[in-house]
Image (cartoon, rainbow, N blue to C red; front, side, top):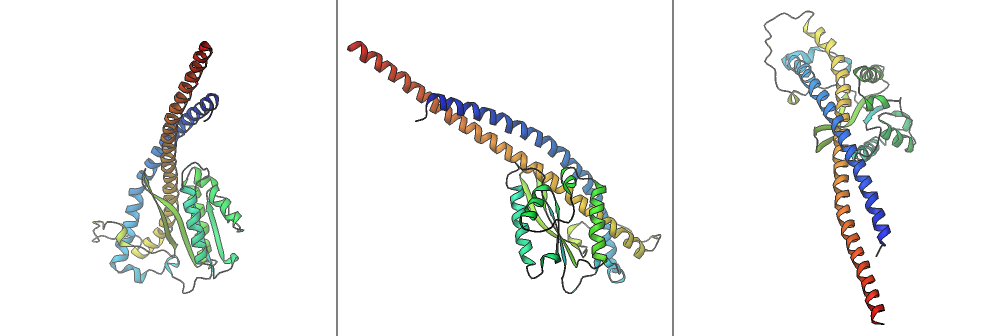
Length: 291
């Protein structure tokens, strides 16, 4: 059995750890509230824009529209993988899950050589994993993972769009966590390019087509497509950021609860050891008196 001094030291250590995890949970919770508010503020605009695109394309425009961003290429010879993680740890299995999924995704393109698989890591943790795999990260997007901004998201989107237009890549795939709630973050894989409009993802809007569009509907949609692509990267960055803070909030809450349970066990152990020590001293005293 551990000595009283050792148990007391462990109790002090666990108490200090509990204070740290509790404080980190409060900070993560505050950041989550801010990130969740940003996602909820942006979501209606994204849904409306996506809904307008869907409505237009459902009304026979898809066949007329010849956007290079919607052209599917027969054989994928070069691919770009955009993977989102956090910059810091202490958020449970958040980063390990996305890194594991990325490695699995990378294996799916094992028929291609390394130079044909371009990896865009958004977040320090996945960037480190990419380097450990012997791959060359395409750019530094640490700040986009920490504090998502529309400007940085647009720059990344423009880079991906330019490579697709120049046929330097035939497909762009996103891998990120979708924020559903504080306790649920869904690891999501999504094809970014070529762009496809899925009408099932949005509610059909009640737009009235008995009016004149200036410029033409075709030109209007062609101009909207880049905006949709820009907004998608920004939405994914916000989604990932909210998921990170949610995962950290849960992880720190779990750590605090575990510390409290361990503290109770150590306190019981300490009291038993102390009681045993007192009993032994009394027995020694009584034995000495009898002698």
